Structures are given as C-alpha cells and as structure tokens.
Length: 127
Image 1 (spheres, helix red, strand yellow):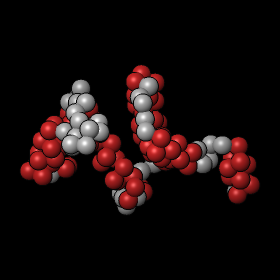
Image 2: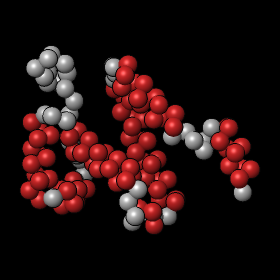
Image 3: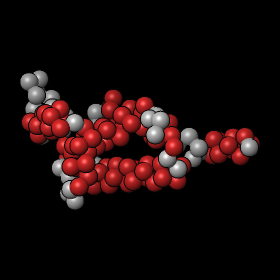
Image 4: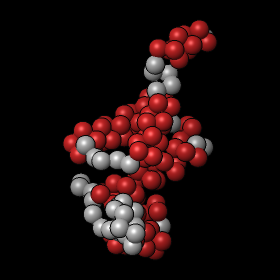
C-alpha cells in the first residue's frame, strides 16, 4: 500500500490507478466508463471501488428511475453488494481504524431496520 506524505497508508482512492480512472471518467463520461467496466469479467480493485462509489451515489440520491425498479430486484442488488462485502471482510480480515470501524458498525446497524426482532414486530402491526 502506498504511503502519503504523513506516513499514513492511503486507500485505493488517491492512487495513480485511481487518478487514471478519474481522468478516463472525465474524458468519456461516467456512463461510458461504467459500460466498459461492466463488460469486463475481472475488475481491478480501483474499478470495484469506483463502481461501489457510483452505487452509493445513485442509491443515496434515490434516483427517480431506481424508484421504479421492482423491490425484488433492489433486494437482489443489495444482497450482491453484501456478498462481495462479506467475502472481502472474511478473506482479508482487515485492520481497521476505530473511527472507520465505528462508522461501518453504525451503517450496518442502520441497515438491519426491518430485519431485527423489534422492527419486524412493528412492521407486522403496521398493516
């Protein structure tokens, strides 16, 4: 892993490969870059992170077209992301800074809404 000027390990974002991908995105546009990445069988770490960043952008802004997607398909999308996330964490068992670990834990806890016992009882009553 590269080290930045402060001696702290950098992430994929900020590497030479990341900058090259950003330059390509600025040249051909994000939609075309996504098409190129999706056409590949094997993606680099930078491409994986770029696609995840793109997913966060679209799912986070609650794109109007995505609101028309069948619920089953959205669940499949999220399960696919979770499977990839699970494999990385299980395989790599990364050392993570406590602040980042707290953030991940918080987001995972938030995402259990509807799965945990309390919200399932609530959802059964809401009908």
